[in-house]
Length: 228
Image (cartoon, rainbow, N blue to C red; front, side, top):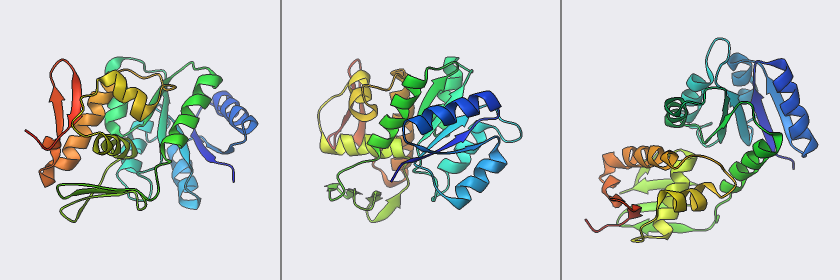
């Protein structure tokens, strides 16, 4: 079955171009012009990936990202934000809101397709794997994380990051290495992106006292360790 991409873009020419490029690659495309239409499309069917423009009439793409990442039925859908806002602070705001990737306008169709495929690949995790470290468990079959039996709500990128850390404990990884292993070598984003998602992962684990496992090694990167 072909994968479905929801395109949310108010500029007709860009929306049409994205639809043609994606359909030529075998994707099923649902293209809408604003947040209201996007919400209606999500209610009908959950897509595999969302391409979301930041500047939309009415509700902005940033607000839609926060909304969808905060809802149980949509939080795991990868969101690639499309925008002409290329300042570092804007990129960080988009990532902090929950976006999984960030593509600046103008963009090449080839690069965009690579990023869509990368997001789809990252959703594929060993479906039978269960990991546990000191009461913190990751059930890949259910795509669920628990701490002392309590469910921990994570976004898809934080889930992949925790999965990588739990399968590679005690070793220090630089930001560049984490980008390669967790995001993939075909995604062209800045190393600061890692810091954003590390903060979000720690915040999710903090109520359960497990944020201390995600350790900063000054001048080197990050590691997952029970040792203080």
